[in-house]
Image (cartoon, rainbow over all chains, first blue to last red; front, side, top):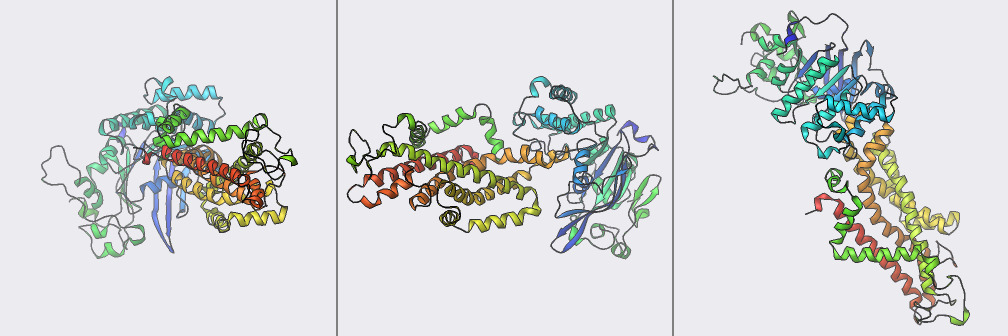
Length: 337
Length: 289
């Protein structure tokens, strides 16, 4: 875990403040929420981890913040996304183009396909730079070489003229990061940035992101299904299930005292190094599809504590301990599994 | 996917790579040689042609091929060899003009339909409507409106090429739009127009170009057919289809007047189709062994 996880959340205004943010998905005549009234804050120089199974809405949430949800079928249904106090939700596409890549950047999961195959990597960095500033091409080129050096690419003067297909996955992800950081964004959204990479490269990329964060003060939203990565990188964690936040806590509190049965299940399904457990404990069942979510707590069909109340009433997200919020009727039970 | 796999070999020296791949197939070599010869004849017609293609000589009417007139003479004693060279020019020009106009408009329509889903239904149904009319019918209609001539043929061919290209371009663009690099492009704040021009178009251009090379042969054939029917290029301007039509009256005693332009069209279209096919095979990595 990070050293600074124990410091209190700064009181200053958060860089990104997401409030009651919802994204709806239309399929035929049914409209179902895939992101349902999600609220969180990200502060300067801090990392927010978003965890959840496939299909829990974490990617839609990140695309929603950028206003890049594929529309139709998806649509931002409500809430606010405050970037330095300004709400982005009413912004037009043209206004968002000024924000994207400039003040909020994004890194995608698959480095093999997230670079345009027909241009050199230098051209793509320069393109990002010149989309948001009036640099000359010579200035942009030398800045591109600087950026490549900054993300740890050796021989950047030569690499700048390479085509993406000549580079390995790890190198491409470094270039994707260089592009994302080109304009010194306030917020960097990293959607599973290391999932497609092998473990040693994963560690290098995570190190790189951490050192870039401490240099630039960029706030990071790190989306992952890998709790190991989250424990390593995040200061605060949001656990999502079926489009809702079910637990929200500082990283040490979440891992020390997971309070929602789902979070406990996620942690129980990871092998431990001391390994005295015979078998891993999987969570039975799968995430319900958006059009078929149960009433009450969305997790109740898979939860061992579920009772009549869980099946009819949705638990609110409430602060149980200082800074640690949980949406469960049975936290008193859940806290001592 | 196509562009991913083809770039490694193609980006260094695309022309040399293409020629080397063509050279491995004897049929493509012959087709390439044939096409080059025909294009050279067309391009250099004013310098190579032994006679003026419009020069009427009533004392040498309907002569069979001889040393003086290698392809013989037509009903007005004009040298068919010279006329074929000039006719080839017009025929090829018709095809290229149609491919250029139809290809440009079709690509634009296809990309817009893919990029802005709201316009998709409207644009593509419009294309389907155009597609439901045969090209010859378009030729008739256009000729009826603006009068027959070269312009009418180009308009008819362009209009009938547009929907075909639009469909191909839309399909290719939809595939490209689903790629992560387009999302990355959006995420760095590029304008729609920049995305279309630098991300979508270059990545579907190979699909479109291969289709156009195959369509070029058909367009030339259709252009010659329209001229043959009297809707296109008007006499005395030499055009292969018009020339073939002029020989019909004497087909039984001077067949060369019709046969020579017809065979020229045949060879032109055949070599274009063979080359188009091999080009597609070379550029499609799935067919590469």
